[in-house]
Image (spheres, rainbow, N blue to C red):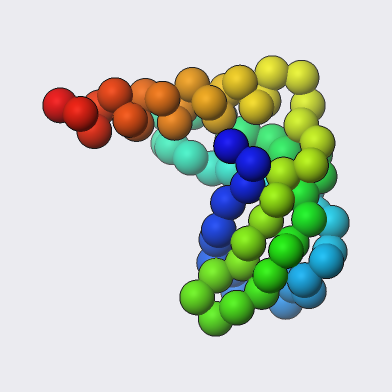
Length: 74
């Protein structure tokens, strides 16, 4: 829950602070992260650490991930 790894065509720099919209599903509104620091930028992906969330957004991500874990057990 503390971050993610992603790919992008945008030019980014390690250490940059960004706002993110996590588009996790067509059925769910994007989950907003107000501030994330880009910890590394590599060809295989960019590592972001989440720093600040709007109220309720972290909980929305937790619920979404729990749903994936439960569905994966079936």
